[in-house]
Image 1 (cartoon, helix red, strand yellow):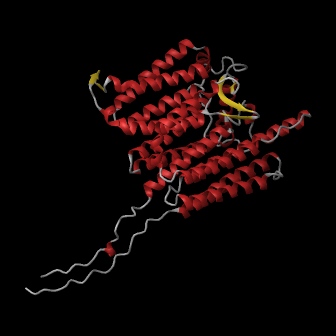
Image 2: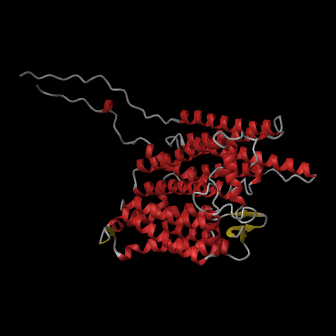
Image 3: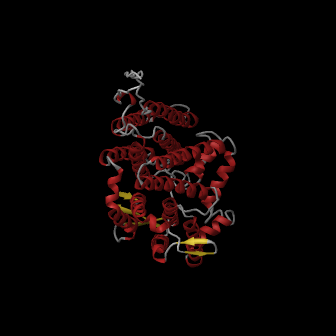
Length: 470
């Protein structure tokens, strides 16, 4: 047997995982094109020419998109390339619809000889800019999402403080029967939107530590496996807090979102369907108690069941919303060619109805698909994440957004009772817009961590050759 030296095989090219930032850039260009076309269509339909402020507004939007894309390239180059373009599309379409309703208000004021109100699109664009700036701040400040787990109980404390802040004297404010706002001087803010993010961080941190004990089955009732009695405590605490929000702040939407988010994360953390069963039982019990105990809940249910019984008064909003959907039909009347201004709060609570009238069922379904894409990319990030806390945090932020869209769209279309939540990224309101951009920033940071190649991996061509005797 002779000895010899095997020659090393030809080098295998190193595989470089693409960052897909150019994909993101192309999608952002498409998002801008869709939004700009909608904005210009509004002007041409209502004025017959471009409004004097259209070019400046569209220029600011383009600059903001360049800013956010550049920040992602520098700070989160491995992050999901589809998430931000989907969000940007919805955000710009929301600006276009607010601009359309601004023009309707100006035309009405001119017909009546009154003074036209200042356009709300400027304030919404300002809040968009602030949201994007805070999105970048999140990418700069949170270089590793796992550091947030250290502040689990701090997030709980701050979240509860923000949730209860509207009840404080002097600063708390009641709008349309719901105590959701705080006012400092001439500024107003809805702290519950930020509380949603902080409480999601708390839920994720808490369940990361306790998920093993919560997954244990001690007893079975009617075939449903239940954990230890003391492990049921967090679920009942979440139930009581959500009922407290409903009772004292008269905020049906936030209480539903808060409780639904916690139950969903319990299921994600433990994979036990029994938590969903317990959550459903507690939800039904709480809903029945709220209906029997509180007049404003009974009113919302009655309006839901009989929307045309008193359409001149208590059910005027939902009745006009349904008329708008019916008028839009399958293809819609066209941007700027309907009458969405007849629906009260068309810029905020009922902006989905405005889009349904002017874009029709097909346009509205396309927008809902965009929301579905955002939720899907968030859940995909949760699955790909390498740590439990990141998985739960990404899942919680995605589920929260999905629940909010379901509650809003279900309310204005009479699938469920109205709750008063705002449509993420579309509706007028700085609180919701800023908070949701912060949530997207956290999702992008987690996605960057999940998709980043392992720095310790050794390429095949770097492996040493070996001398082998034959």
